[in-house]
Image (cartoon, rainbow, N blue to C red):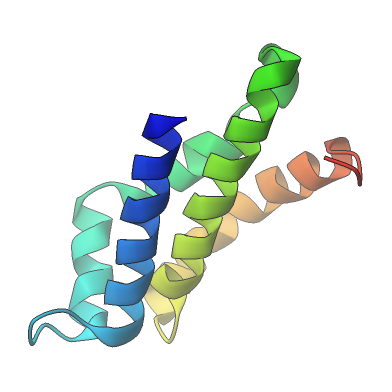
Length: 105
């Protein structure tokens, strides 16, 4: 749970930096830096994971982590056509994941 809390804090910081900038660095530059850190590949990887490969009691953490990454991704693509185009690659995996996750999850 501690690692999940850390990941949530990191994702919230990324969301804020992409939304507001950071120490004089504009949001567009923050978004570009995230491309260099492989942020997109982490989002894509998390969406490609099959939740059924994990024990039932771990799936809540996996869902929470995926949600955090997707929340940060919203700001990663905000007003950035290049990042939006790149993020469209994850749509099929997101659709598949949502089709497989029951409403009560």
